[in-house]
Image 1 (spheres, rainbow, N blue to C red):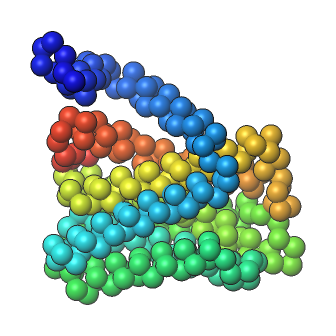
Image 2 (spheres, rainbow, N blue to C red):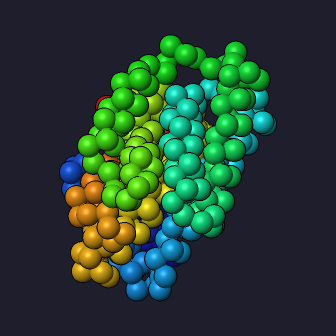
Amino acid sequence: MRTKKGLSPMNVLIGWLSKNSKKVNILLLILLALITLVALKFIIKDTDYCYYASQAIYIVGTLILFYKLFTHKNCSGVSLKTQELMALFLVARLCCSMVLTEANIHTTIDLTSLLSVLLVIWMIRFKLKSSYIKELDTIKLHYVIVACAVLAIVVHPHTGHFRIYGTFWSFSVYLEAISVLPQLRYMQNAKLIEPMTGKYVFALGLSKFLGLANWIIQIYETRGEYFFLDGGGYFWYLIGFIAEMVQSFILADFCYYYIKSFMQGRLLKKMPV
């Protein structure tokens, strides 16, 4: 149905949002996220479903990236350093999973993710290296890795005789939280966003939102006791929760502009300043 002026409700909504300041729209987006979170709380009976949904969206994003690499035959706009950080934190997590827990669906998903990331790295380094612009991938990985390692040594879950694996686990959590930074910096340096890469990063953002929702719902349902589970101590779980928030908010700005451009019927072509 259209309004008297011939505008659809979506166009009216877009026009209204475009008149608002960025701060107002961000507040509206936060409100929408909170409403979505409450809806998830009542719709989803098992919080594991949030995790599975998060991983499903991540897989969709990976398939989009594969489509770009194998169909378009180029890796323009894709950060090799983000993929390398992802491979590193997945290796650390898998090492801990095999020692501290029995193999389960989480381990299988992480292993599948690692194999897909390694395939992407191989494609960029060898098959499509002519389309990879190294000068735009400027994040210094050794600074990022060392910072995460130091934080993991200081703050990690208590795991008895397997304390070293608790350190590796926390290292994977901290590294995952900032692994997307090289990708965002790459797009900023390039001053444009390749369409398929934009869809991939947006899928990562949605995945991280559901991961954060999983944390919040579990903290709410346990009345904060979730911070004390597994003998990890409230400080470790608090830091882990903050890390989950960090990776969500790192992608929040990109997702905001991506959704805004999508509602306006156009692609996001450059990173917002």
